[in-house]
Length: 159
Image: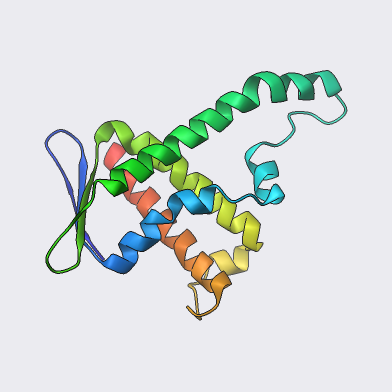
């Protein structure tokens, strides 16, 4: 898959990342920014049913900051991936600075939630591996699982 090492400054260095894996990682932003209204509702649920003033305040004062925070996290991930270097072998090397780990966790979580919601993945599908890589839904499940593994790796480095 790739070699991951923790640098002295706490950054994570990913080396020998296969081109296919790099492409999947570059899809984090796209997955998280899907225009599907179900995803939007999942990211920004109404705070309370029946209380219109609370819902209006939520949309006016809280939701814009959430949008901004989510967007900032996705931009950080995209910038880190744009900084990747391609080796002569076709593999990639990139670094996630320690200060960017929270942004990566946020963007990965957004992408996973968006993929799960947009494709209607249930518990049964989430507990099995993808089967047919020619099926776009199964490809989405594969991406969701890769993002989950990366989240686990990032969380482990925080411990």
